[in-house]
Image 1: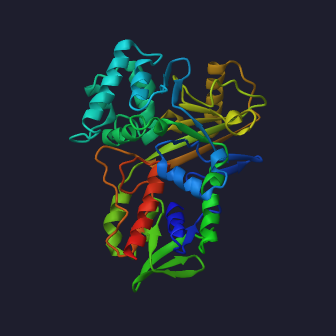
Image 2: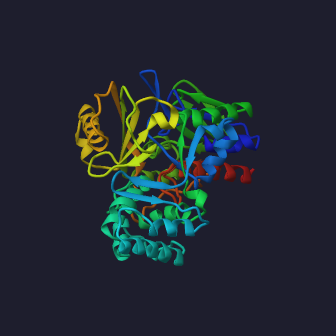
Image 3: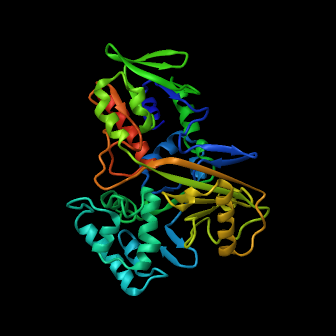
Length: 416
């Protein structure tokens, strides 16, 4: 949709094929028991500049669609980091030095770590695992457990023992160490489909394009100077193509394009990490102190107060990123475990009226050390790849996906 909107903005008519009945992919709205949920509790940060720009372009109510707050990283009862009301980089330096839940020595070590990374422009001579990077810079147990490791898992959705330190530093550079506004956190007050994909489709249609949901692409073939797209019942021809399929489908759909074999092979080598979102509907409000709160010593890593965020009374969303023991539980058992954890953290709670577990087992690729990712430009003329898995400084985030689509569109318009 980012590619389509960017082309539409430049008066290039496009056709979007979406296999599902609704737009958004892994960032879409889901209806359950007359309640608008999301297939994952995504957050945005101020550093997502291209994502926020496109939302503002297509969504007439963009200003009210997002709840924006200064960085306030809280692990319930254990840890708190707040960005100071100072210009960058002092906002983070003072924030680290005044952390609650870590010793003074650990706070100084964390500030020294960020200063050391700034001195090398956040570029490592060679990629290593996040855990090893933190060990080399003597990060203490509290800062590691309550800040660096949760931040790595939240941003890269990859366990720190195997996660790319270079990509992790890219995230730190453009969020915590950039402008103060770049570290701000935004939560959607509307479901994710209504935030961007739906308005984006309207924008594309208003600029002469079409968006076809329920249209799965079975094959793409070369057709002279262009490309033929085959769905189950229809045949289309285009001068340019942007393939935004999930990486695990790339090989099958481009089987008739031998030039794509290298990109397809890179996509086939990707490993995946899950994200589980557990929704619990309580008969009354759960007393969370803030809309978004980290937890420790349990399965749930983050909990979100949907009542405070978007008025859904008594609804809590708990998120578990990356692999772990929760994958061995049934969905009912997992929901029960999360309910018990919430009761321990916030006092006795009544039984939920209902529960819904959404398991994205291929939520993101595993952002591992020295991972090679296919570029957006391919050996085929006028054929491009878009997706968060393509070549990027960023892990599998909304911003990475959006930037990949914009890059494809820019190359198309530049080539004429």
